[in-house]
Image 1 (spheres, rainbow, N blue to C red):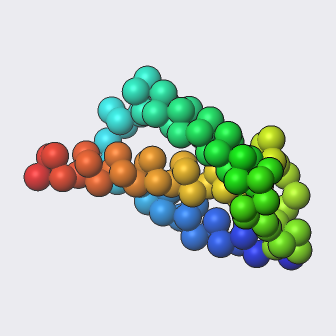
Image 2: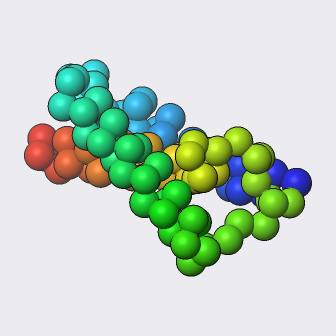
Length: 95
């Protein structure tokens, strides 16, 4: 029933990895600002493409929780993408 939510478990494991390997200094105001901006953009643009019927979700596979019109599962990808990008950046800049 919650196929996308289960898929996000994989992304959550990547998130945990990122948090575990990156030094705490990345969790500053800039990271939070970038994350907030990306989550806002996700909410707006995902809702627009859903509202204009460009994308449809099979209700059997999502939890039903939404922010505006975007399923909550869409936000996992944004969080992981931001943290993974910053993790890779931090790792490469210290080598």
